[in-house]
Length: 164
Image (cartoon, rainbow, N blue to C red; front, side, top):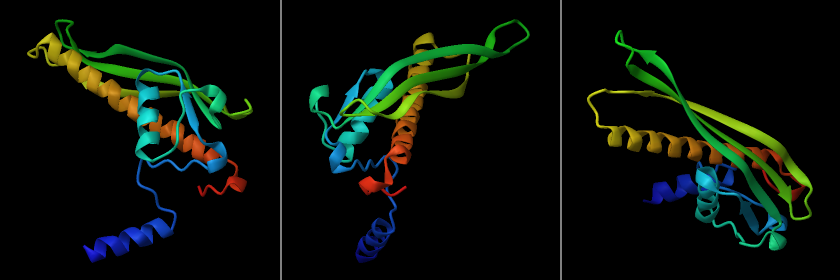
């Protein structure tokens, strides 16, 4: 137990942060997430989990993360000799931008695109396939939220005391 506390203290002191941890300077708090969908909810969850103050009013925000759009798509990438689909490529796209409370852009609109393959098993019921694809899309939205927050961290001015 003592060893875990010592190691944790050392890692915290060197700038190490757990994956998903968000460090927003007080000058940019509270944060408002506009838009929603899977990636918006995932961003909000990461902010809450990191103890970052948030608001439901854009006018009170020091930082606005705006999810402009999100899109799910799939295409067949493998078929058997009878023409039945064996694998799909699932794509998740999220477009976002980040501004400060005055409307100044910290991150201009960007699109994140994530892809995963999904092997189709003809012996599995359709509902099971739908559930599995939903899980994959949720994972991609979580990955997109991580990327949005990583890009935000890189975009924050060094003068605000955020280490990269």
